[in-house]
Image (cartoon, rainbow, N blue to C red; front, top):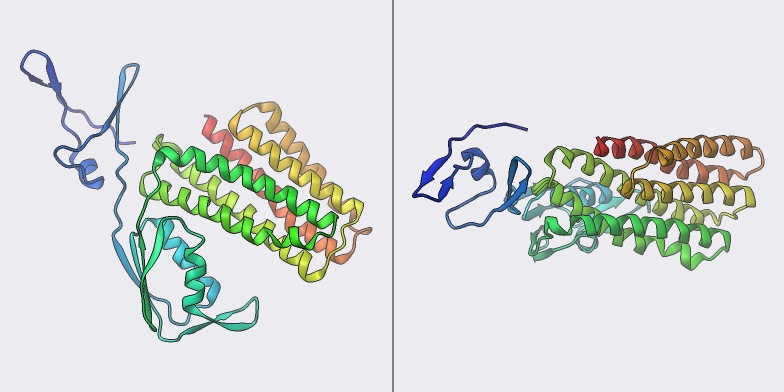
Length: 316
């Protein structure tokens, strides 16, 4: 936080003015006639704007990138705050390593755009494609979006467990659609953090990390669902118990995030070691497929451990 002193200018008998820092005004493109919000907090007056840092347009040649890499690149450029993205490519296809085949680049670009909010393909040719953000979320919507992410991730964990235990292939496969829905909210939230930042500036990097961790958990559920379907994994009672405890720990973190309590901090620590010990204890009783599934899901416990520390940082 940069502190700058300004002299008060007296206008007539009642009006007092203080000039805005030039660097801040340029950063957020503040012009004559624009409105900014003024909030009183005791002996402080906080000025803020919903204006964002404009990154403008960018052009990238994605020739030679595999399917996953250029899709991640599109999402990164979107969350970084670019308004128009031109993608050039010399070949119409790219490697899809997971499926071990070639896929059409333009089709995969359409798929990724559908996972993002407010961005559309405005022009496409055989060797390039232009994406443009046509509508933006407001920082006022950030808390609503974050709460939605928590709820959707908790629901995804429950559905994955139910589908795996009941051998409900349809429910497990629906994780792909759930993943894409959650990705929309996560990407919009990251874009807001990059372009506008959190209303409390020092918390921006912490919120950014929290959202990225939730994104990793979202991916872990998707990957686990794919593995259950691909290997037709049958879930034993022991495996079910561990998966349930992981879900419970995720729900407890959700509670901690919105109602900080040292008791819940301790509960999360205890749950982590209980889960790790149970995985070790059951390892000889579980099938190889179940062990592989639990080792993947264990990454959620590791993410919660780091998320817990970030929540304490937000508190203090």
